Image 1 (tube, rainbow, N blue to C red):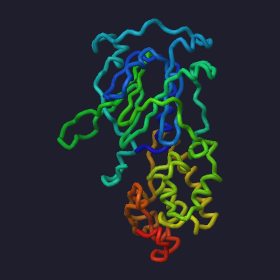
Image 2 (cartoon, helix red, strand yellow):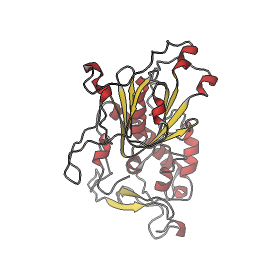
Image 3 (cartoon, rainbow, N blue to C red):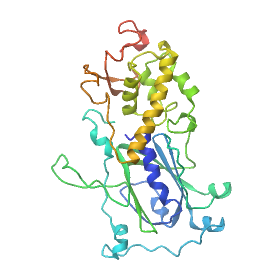
Image 4 (tube, rainbow, N blue to C red):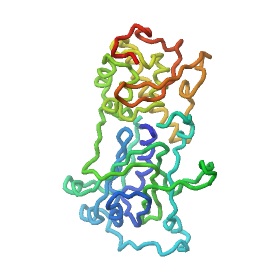
Length: 339
């Protein structure tokens, strides 16, 4: 599934639409009351870890708070042969697109904060107005993505050999003529966004002390890194890459690692995530050091295994036994770490 840098990029795609009124709602989602978004105003957009939150409010809110007058009644697009400048709003075909970097995943691998504040086109609202907003929570699955003012198109045939475009879960057409398309995501209503900046690796409020304490637990380091309570937004790609950069074996016990090694791992987690986001915003791909590789950059053979807690979710991991020696050595670990 998309990791923190991808979801932050999704949030930045939605930000220019804040302040606009929803003119039409489409998509394949069966979530109740999504059609009620029509004629509401997109009030806010927030990302936290692997989750995106969008707030919608009554059009009159912005007017009563001193904003611009609301537009007249929103009419449905009559046909696909409407005016050319509104043709995008009449599309009804949909699809679940593939995130650019996910296309590089192996068949087995299914699964920063940029210092820049996006200007919002709606005026500041009081707590009273914010309390009336309705929030949608988006959690993206494999190949989940958002596109602005375009639909995803098939770039290869499916298993049946058909070139079918993916179907979106939700399409929001706005009164400006633009639209947002959401692919392969779970959508839920919520009363407010669940945002924990202290655990978000892309947040300037990321709490290094809290993260360091988590890493020092007597458990395999790769398990802790995927714990979203402490490393929100950190996924399997980031996990593999930063462990190699820090020269730490994924099954090394956190409590036995030097403090300097753990601090180095934290540095790599923040820097790698930030760099990945910058590359995404610049339209550049990510060059992996160890993930999906057969040899490490130094030419050593790379090991691959499915690692995870006995009672938890297991993920594919790649590591170099020579560059990333295990602590403690294999065979000497406590029983709780044996598989």
